[in-house]
Length: 449
Image (tube, rainbow, N blue to C red; front, side, top):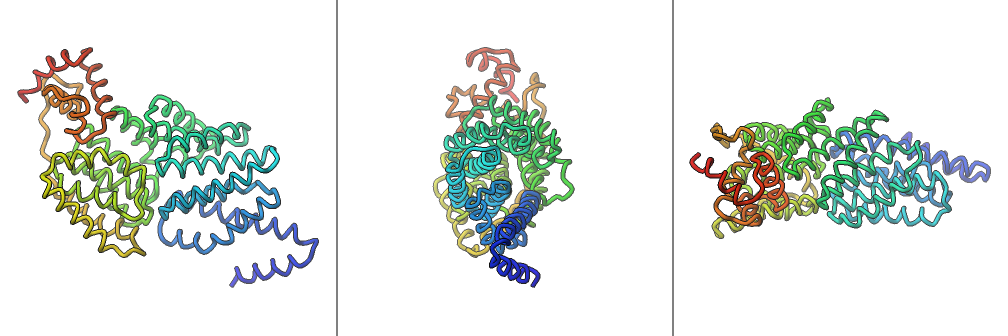
């Protein structure tokens, strides 16, 4: 009722010429504050109630954006851009979000250059670049984010610039430019700390953890991720839903299955209370890696098929999972591989299309909890003469000692070629060897264990 009275009053005031400008500004300001509140809610904890609240107001927010552009009122456009990005992420509508944000950016480019316009355009391009990056269009994302960085150079834009740096770091990581990624992410982290932006701090730590995982620097990844984890008060807020599965992946890759299992179960239990698909995909991807590592190849294949064929699938996560699925296909008996894929499609068909996110986060999470809880984790024997090698690195040494190429070895261990090369680099450094012949000679120490 309050909302109806407010709108009726605005319509009447708008009939008075001298009140039009003030009414328009009040409308834009009101919805900017609402967008700001929704942004904080969506970033901290996504559930269906919050998404429905945004959905009820999205038409008015669209009107506010149009009014802002028409009247060169650029002050709040960054808040609207951020809301569109978060809202479309929650619904899996990445392409739709990218089109809207690029449309706003195109309108802003037509405006004369001045500080507020540049700041607004820079912020819109930041979230446009992030939305494009989530779709795995990283070259395009890089162009948008680099343009944004050039527009956010004034001291008042430090928070907006920090987001740009963070997304640039993540995009560079996706392109395999790990050192550049870390440099950008550390700069983003420093900027977020300057303005006491805790959301930005844990996001940057998470991105640094991801980059360290890709480089095979698992102890460094744990260092970053464990800094982020204590920053959250609620277990089902966005932070733990992102950080916990990354810790699960890290401990899986470093050979600590017991810790990996613990973190993944925590993540799965938290996933049952949310409807945002992105952190759920992180968790499911981590579970697939863990299941394959534990020899549960049919279960891993079924899970990967669910993630690849889910109607609201995340393209970036799917791209990262392709080598794992290819490896499973080459190692599983064709009939078992086909049966696992068929079971996954049957599960997907049972999901109600209008509650597909909820089905994945609740029904499938419960199934995975039960499965992972009952996987026995044997105590790993200590490898002799190798106190500095992780269990995964010892596996790499064993595989390479059989004469496999880097690509063949990566396929055997269900990891990407890039990750395998990082393992080899770390092993060379730890064992003080300089070529494959020396490594194989050194490997004889481990083959009897």
